[in-house]
Amino acid sequence: MRPWIFLGILSLAFGSDPIPAPPQSHPILLKNGIIHTITQGTLYGGDLLFDKGKIIRVETNIVPAPGMDVMDISGKHVYPGLIASVTPLGLTEIGAVRATRDYAETGEVNPNVRANVSYNTDSELIPVTRSNGVLFANVTPQSGLVAGQSSLMKLDGWTWEEATMLSPTGLHIHWPRMGIRTTGEKVKPVTEQEKERREAIRKLDRLFDAARAYHTLITGSDATRERKPDTDVKLASLVPYVTGEKPVFIHANEVRQIVAAVHWARKQNVTMILVGGHDAWRVTDLLAEAKVPVIYENVLALPLRRYEDVDQAYATPGQLVKAGIQVAIAASSSSFEAPHQRNLPYHAGMAAAFGLSPDEALKSITLRPAEMLGVADRIGSLEPGKDASLFIADGDILEPETVVEQAWIDGRTVDMRDRHKGLYQKYSEKYRRMGLIK
Image 1: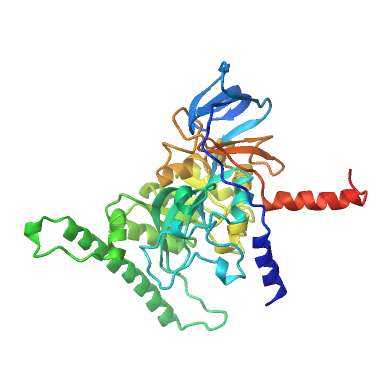
Image 2: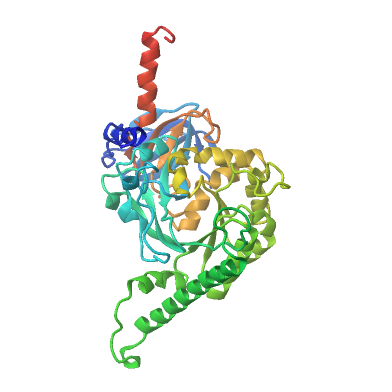
């Protein structure tokens, strides 16, 4: 066994082992904080009361009652839990170790696959991610043309069943390459590349047409059919998408992919959400007219073309919002980016530095993804009646130096230990013994 693989497996055996939180047992009152409600602006010197997993009141001068746990958070900021809109978090641990990768299924078309059943609640990446305020993750399968269905997970829980907030949240399609490759190893002839592209789109058409026919068959009256049709797992899983009940997340970055995907979604009459969107700034009129929301995951990326401005990726979210397009920001849905989901607020912060308003930047990682995923009635903002999933930070969460001090999910006090903090404490002690720090 290679040494680096052995060390990777060893790191799994000696993790931080944070313990899932028990249900909230008594009311908690946060007093004198800076409350970022998201929907009603920022409340300075405000109080927030939550009990039994729900927010009860958000206002000033709430009088404590017997039995309340009162926390004076003067000068501290309170935010709703951040939402990773598309991510492989919980489906992969160490990219070099095959046994820890569970984000892909065999075959090109797997609409029946659901991500939550493979979610690993003991992943070392989860505590690290929630230590920076990310309390929810829309966990997304990765492989093939039709990858499967994503699931919204709470980043705390003993089992995948307990961690699941909503499943499925949508179907994920990776749009085929529209350009023609002319360089690189094993380049296929142009005619073959064009044939593969056409066949991939035809495959999508046939799949959705069959699902629509299947839905018509199973919902028809007994008098219109000779016998009850056999269950087709793949077609049955597509019914919520051909009826418009659930959105279809189409992953596309290059402008020709985006345009083709929008026209295909119109033809199939499905609710589309664009994921990726590197070139979305080129087709803002089309996206706005078609009312296609965008989960933009390229804020910290390089330009696609040599002639593009070096800051185009940073500025794109602001340009999309200015055009009237609903935008959520994601770190990345790539399997290689699972360890970096903790950086989500910095992606939004960079967009805020290049044209996106700070309020909209904060919404792009809270309320906007909640709206796209159909859970805005529960999370994404701090309002009475919503889930008490929130955190306290010592500063602006969009700034890298800000530290998240405590978090709650459904009112449950989250264990804030993680592997990064454990290593920091370990090596701080080393240099303390050497006399290099106090």
